[in-house]
Amino acid sequence: MRYIMRRSCLFLVMIAVIVFTGCGQKKKEDPVTVTLWHVYGGQTESPLNDLIDEFNETIGKEENIRVQVGSVTNTNTIHENVLASAFGDPGASKLPDMFVSYPKTVLAMPDDTELVDYYDYFTEEELNEFIPAFLEEGVIHERLSILPVAKSTEVMFINKTAFDRFAKETGAKMEDLKTYAEGKMDTVTIGNAEYTAMPEGNSIEKTYMYRYEQSGTSYDIRVRGQEIDDSDKELLEGIVLKLEDEGNKDAPWPWEGEPVEPVLAEQMVGSYTIVPEYIPFKEAQGVMQIMDHQFVKQGNQVFHLLENKLDTYEYSESGLEFVSSMELDDDFEYLSGDSSGMLYLSPGIGDVIGVKDGKKALQTTVDGDLNMHPSGEWGISFWVNSDTQKIANQGGNLTAEPWILTGLNKDEERKGLFSMIDDVQITNSHIMVAGSMAVEDEGTKIVVYDYDGNQLLKLGGEDISSPDKLGSITGMAETENGFVAADGNMREIQFWAKDGTHVGAISTEDIFGVSYPWLEDMQLLDDGSLLIMLTQERDDGSANELMFFRLTGF
Image 1: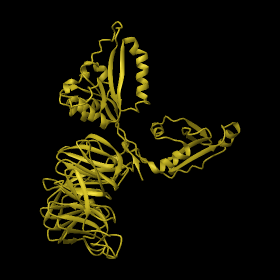
Image 2: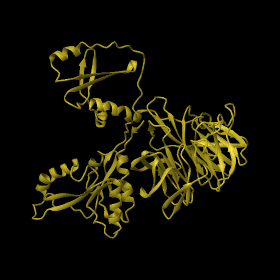
Image 3: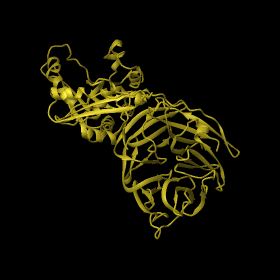
Image 4: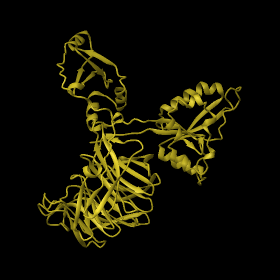
């Protein structure tokens, strides 16, 4: 199941050398030419290019100004090309007069005074038409260097699997949903109900939809064949629905929903007092997916991976603030990082890539989910019941060789205890592996190995009544006092001493005050604390809340 989440947050940046001296003056023999790099469409087919052509033939011709499009590409390429031009890299193009980008591009430029101050071009009244927060994001050193042209504060989540089936039958498009949500679609009264007329995907089918919220029932009427005539309309008018009010109330849209408010409470495990801290997003994150989120914290930034999108957040005492979003060419399911700032993104079946400083920096030929040692020199890749591999990093060239756990799905060839692997975590001293034991009825266990692959400990209870009975491990760590695991299925955080003795377990409801979350991921931070990411359904059913918590005390 896949959902779509997109946030538009592009800005128009103008180089300071532009002076519109042509405006209001007599037409000169040579027009003022303004170059532009943007991301809207392709080089040959672009809605913005069409508008530019219209401008050039009308107002531009009158004012002796011509806009020339130098590049139509994507934000990542524009980011790279603008910085190459700004730093004077050999072979780089001259900076355009205007470009569309994310703020990170401007912040990375060596001299932002090259850019115009939009305060000089807009009146206070005109600036008041913008949402203040959007403008504030473009202010650098008290100058409005970045103008928001495609900002959005609302996010729509769509079950794309279901929508694709619907779209195939009706011709509906994603763009139609926003219009529908805003109540701008045409409506038709049929019988005793007012239906929404869905956009026509073809000339031989018309679709009308009606939602009766009080019973939680959706109706659709599909008319196939030639154009609807009077006899068809008479037939449709005879359709009368039996509408019964069952007291149902639909959930609000995600952006209208009420965020989850956690209730924190310190908890004891053995002699340790575990202290929780909520790390809120500055803008609440309502998501539809669960079980698919990964994160890595590096320095004061948190990177959040969900399918084909890698978001960057600034981490501070006040919470997490959105910085940028990188759209990836493929879907990825696993994320790890090293001390150099490299992020390793794994698609599972497919080759691992590396991302650094907001751009793709590494293409490998190794597959599986790669957990990298903090040094970045080596790692372990795994995927369900495939053979594990030890990965070596030789100057950016990643090579693979079999590790100790192989033949997981073949009893006669199996090496090691596992028939399936859920997660791997390389700590500063050990390799922790979680998964299903090959021996029947042993269930899920965590095995701790040294770097040479020697088994040292096996963690996890033997039967359902054991306090450390494990379900599905979604994160592991080794602290100064022992081992910790996040169990998504059991909604618990488990603690063991260095010798493998079980210290205790804490339920997410007791420590975070959330009733039935999915623990998505966990990471040991440099200060010895634990950062945990989870998703919890909102009380109003509008979405699942993406939440971060920090734990200290173990």
